[in-house]
Image (cartoon, rainbow, N blue to C red; front, side):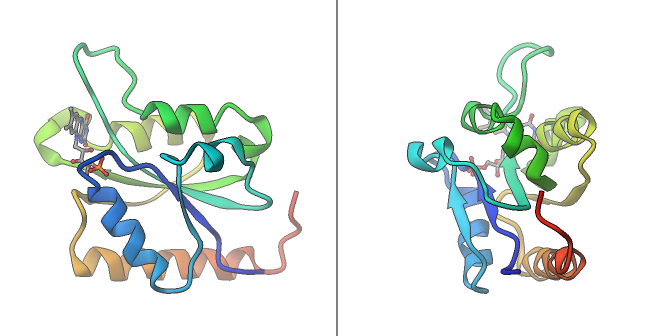
Length: 144
Ligand SMILES: Cc1cc2nc3c(=O)[nH]c(=O)nc-3n(C[C@H](O)[C@H](O)[C@H](O)COP(=O)(O)O)c2cc1C
């Protein structure tokens, strides 16, 4: 089985995008949910979501970016999600990583890794290790 693909969303500031691009250097498939064609597709096996949190305005507002919510509308896509990586900023206090953590609670999938902004080289290394362990765990598992 090929390395588990990472689907990510990044806004114009592209902080998450830089981290995603670094993950892709390892040969991992990395796909942007800013691309409408990618959003319309369904992963053909297990996949990992990498998302920033975006809180705007009031306390009840959802923090998961709209393109990520659109992608998750497909039940097949939701079923094949195996883990979540969050990017955020600790300045947001109690809302730090709210999107990744709320989706984890709602979906029952684990938050695999969290980092701030575009991450450090150590973050990248740690995240690559976690994804490689996931690849190994998924190898041999039947695709559903
Ligand atoms: C308007 C706005 C709201 C944000 N809300 C949160 C938040 O609720 N929690 C958090 O951890 N980070 C929050 N952040 C920080 C971003 O998630 C973080 O900067 C991330 O790296 C942005 O990724 P991107 O540049 O790929 O879009 C917010 C940033 C902005 C500009």
